[in-house]
Length: 363
Image (cartoon, rainbow, N blue to C red; front, top):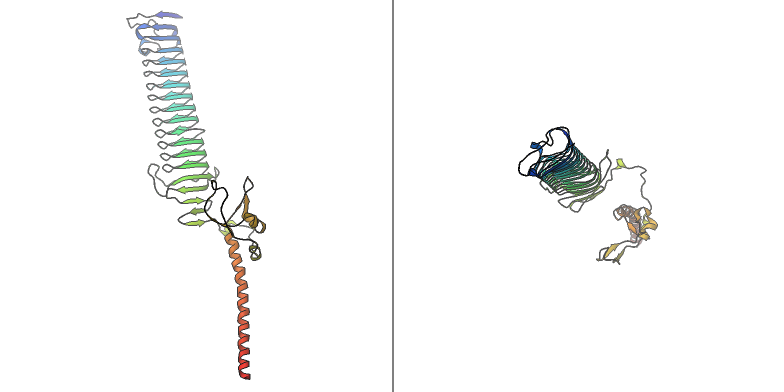
């Protein structure tokens, strides 16, 4: 072990090369304590106002510092602590194991974390922040766009000012947000939630368009992506099948998708038991305050239970869309009655005409 001190005026390093050392260098106001195997603590690698404590640490930048083993802080006011970390940007910080803070004011912490852009931050397990002022946290996350943020596991925020969180989600459009499992937000300023949605592929991620899917809820699987709901920038809303205020309601109804098909019969008598009503909702904070027209769900449930559902609070709701099938069948049954009555009336009129002709002849 060598214990040395330098002259306060002369820029002198008393011991070059490897060895166990404790050095205070007044001319460089630098401190070294530990051991090196090479030239890490030679004069050319000692920054003014720097410190290095541990094994094979190199603090060559002005005001830089290293603690641990095999760390490098080679830019002004940079810090590397842990094992085999590198802080090469000015004002940068690298902590943990093999973490790299490459650019100015960047921070990396964890296991092989990398911050490779100005003011970027990467923390966790093999996270990467390559966009200016971007942030990556978690496991295998990537923040690529300017001021983008990626949280969770294997998420990616590649659009400028984008945000992704969850697992394997991707925010590709500028200002986009992707959250959940395997979600993909490709359109400009779009939001995608849920799991494994069908992505809007044919979009410009940096320029808005009327047809962009700006809000999507996915409910698919890794092998079969699917959307439960999506809204376009042009205010078209699609649910399950399709619902669009401008195009009406379209529900999936292909006969090839159905089984156990049975005709609806004898509904006219049941409809007679249902009274259409007008009403107001009691709770106008939760429901519309305007005058309503509809049915009582309890009455519908007695005759057509398939059209009624119950929520977790016990309140009933009516599927008004499917009532149209019941109404059409009722019209058909009523039309059959009317046709039968028309035939009877025609027959009676014919008989009456014949009777009138006979009476005229008798006269």
